[in-house]
Picture 1 (tube, helix red, strand yellow):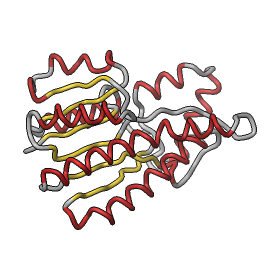
Picture 2 (cartoon, rainbow, N blue to C red; picture 1 turned 180 degrees about the vertical axis):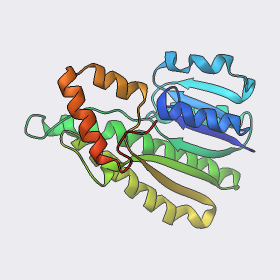
Picture 3 (spheres, helix red, strand yellow; picture 1 turned 30 degrees about the vertical axis):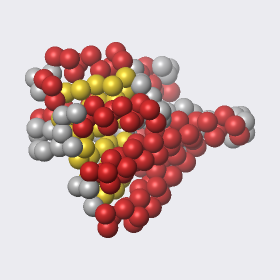
Picture 4 (cartoon, rainbow, N blue to C red; picture 1 turned 90 degrees about the horizontal axis):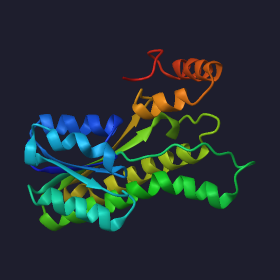
Length: 217
């Protein structure tokens, strides 16, 4: 695999799995994560200098630009995966509008920043590239309490379509992947914070949402 890649939220869970796959395929990868401790595993990775890390916010233009610079110090930027996300419950009858908007932005802003950075780099080097935006089944089928997350993911899919139309003719491919629920560290921590009965209820609801009758692993 030629080129370099940036994966936001690349320290844990789905993001880490994406980073590992790209490294296994021979790419140079910058894992960008807000939590520097989540990036420690890259220091001992057998990919060596192809395994790179940036600690910072994916919604910060300067951080994203630095990640792109680091990637291109190894090879031309070929792909960008917008995976960084947070999940915070909120309902409009208990949360004021400003806080709801802030929670939506927590999931939407990193995607806008990542797409902006990637598109500009792709156009600058003239070789095109690929953007993958990680969406969710909740973009199409929300569940109670997930209003900020579901709204942001629906916007991510709209952004994906708009960018694909606008830049496809210039060699920039933009796609979204809508994941179901995945048993990551964050998922396990969420269940651990619930009472046993509440956790069992959540797991039962999630089994009903997925055609295979379980969350992804």
